[in-house]
Length: 339
Image (cartoon, rainbow, N blue to C red):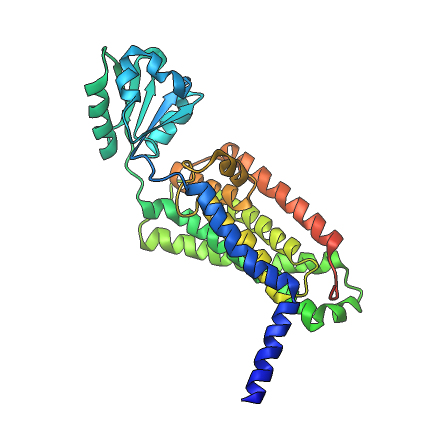
């Protein structure tokens, strides 16, 4: 019993003395809970989503024809600067109705059950005749919508933990010190790690995507070449983030905390499982800084909307910019030994 207690005490003391690990074990769950409370703490979401074209939300009630409609509960009104972007959301079943108060017109999706109901509510409340416009597109199943997110999530965990955690273990076990005695430079070592992980990630991600598309008959409306390009850019970006996180740490517990701190918020804020359109505007802005957001968005645009290269350029440019910054920081801060 004495020996058992001595080992128990020694292990606990070792953990407490590792200040970085102790801090992350306490801070990470608190940050996660506070983040969720901030993002999604506004109560039950509205049941219907209505896009409003070129009109501030507060001024909808100024139009006589929409006065009563704007006061109905459980309807979320979202402002759009142009008609095209609003109708695209309507086609994707992300909006139930689109209205243009300035011209007394509305649009519905003929294939949307919620659109049918919200149209009935609208027509029962308007005070004057309004024009109807229609779009027609098949509803996107949740499994079709979530597949790009699952692929992106898998690439994220593979990129962050598959390379970051390994490098920390190499440093802790002295492998990097032995490599330092060779003519190998830090940039060469980092490049080799990136290329190895890139090959593994692209192979597994393409296999998962192709298997799900053909076996489960999921949507793939775009080009496989563009799909590969987006996966390539996304993999590079996520791998480079993992490298940056592991460039100096020699504690596996601390590295695990850092990687979890990066990966979990990224998974929930990047639209992997659900849209964050109802989240706080500050978090929506933050999401645009995350590489997984642009990867998942690009994959969805290709697979569901048959996006072309021009449409994908903003996502690709952002991913390559993140990659360049993270690799430069990793090469500059990289340490062969324990700190």
